[in-house]
Image 1 (cartoon, rainbow, N blue to C red):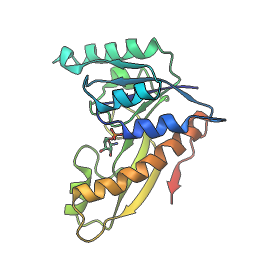
Image 2 (tube, rainbow, N blue to C red):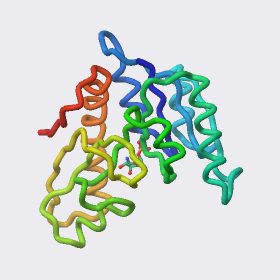
Image 3 (tube, protein in one colour):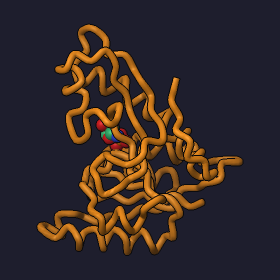
Image 4 (cartoon, rainbow, N blue to C red):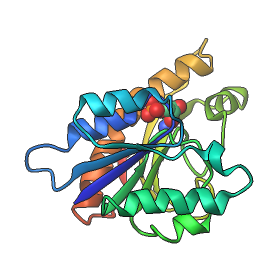
Length: 195
Ligand code: GRF
């Protein structure tokens, strides 16, 4: 299986996904694509020997369909079987999600269906939640709304702020995403709940 990974920033999830696809793993990375030309993850991907590409959403202001058509064109040129969104910060419409239906995953830093959207850690803290976490889900036209394929729960600790909670959750994202991708690549859609 060929896996394309979409990023917008540092790409720590991308790095762990790439490093997981070795040996008898049924998938290999074929492309890292960023909407942000200066994304730190691009240099990391190049250092890992992965092809990279940029589709700058600022070239498509007010033209979401045009941006997604450009994404699809670059992606199709690398013939991916699976798309992984990893810290990708653009909302994708049916033009993209429909094209890749059943073949596209995302990691979101909350225990979905709670806290779809942004500022998930701050919202959990402000709600006084005892637990937070991350979810891998199939991407549909509904933002952060597709079927959940895996989750990890972490405690919210006294004195946590958004940054300390985000760091605790991110460490678990780096375990969950590779585990879910491997199962997905093997055709296993059974949700994985860790620990
Ligand atoms: C992090 O906030 C992570 O929780 C979310 O995307 C952001 C950047 O992650 N998935 P990455 O380091 O670019 O993978």
